Length: 364
Image 1 (cartoon, rainbow, N blue to C red):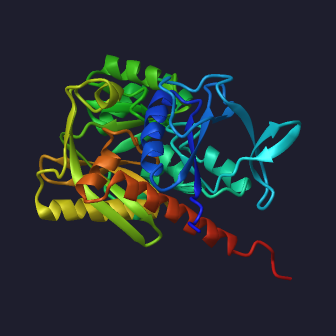
Image 2 (cartoon, one colour):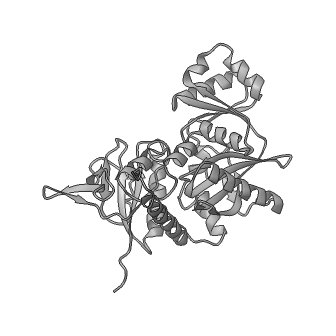
Image 3 (spheres, rainbow, N blue to C red):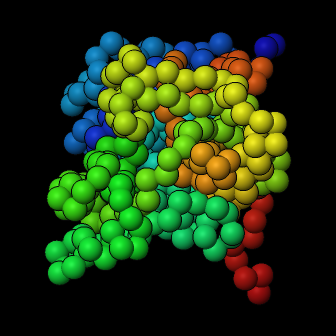
């Protein structure tokens, strides 16, 4: 008798501004999983309602709508926990063996969903609570890099109330120069980011970022090439992909360049000296370890005009669409999308068993 295929719950949609990107990532992930696993679609509406969506393919709609599927709830517990729905007046467990989050941004990539899955006793793909939170918060992430001696761009972290202080604009320009990038600390896909070339633009950029987050990061604008490296593995056994280069259509790789502007292009492998490639791969692994990551990550870099390699940021749930760099970099490294998602599921199950083996009582 053939072994029953593992059931993978693809979790997508969500409350962040990256809802549509999440749907597109989930569609590609589900298609890649379908050859070897049973796929169960779990969509989260913009209002935060969880639904079991019938079928193994995501409908063509660009969002998870209210009432689109069977409502689900998350129940805590190791043995008795999981995802549940009501049928015939009885609560029934959705038979999910492992969850594959395809949620980008807040309420999905920041440790919140990971914590929920932990208390529900569900194995899941990707970084845990700590790694997800650090990976999402650009200030905390760079603080860790700086403490570990991992080279990164010069930056300054601010709270929203700081931007109203007298002299803050002059202070930022004196410390970091111009131009500057201003970003919400906890958003992905370049949402809310603005490049400031003047004092006036800096003030506008701070106000824009403050609309999206209570914490803001201001970074020096580095002249150089934008390159990326994909990672796959867990605790000391982490593989780095070939390095790819981004050629944005606009001034930088913003939301429009990533998902809407057909003028943007990528190249993998990037045309870089071998020693630079090896440095990027080594720093990628160092960043992965420093943030306590697991499963997958994409590390973004700048290579300056002088050849210096600087870590820009780490993405713990990178875009997983057909045109996204993460699966493309692994394809260029000789790994198909089917093999890639298979490996990610196996890592998730291994890590879950590791955690179950740990003692949680004092042993008295």
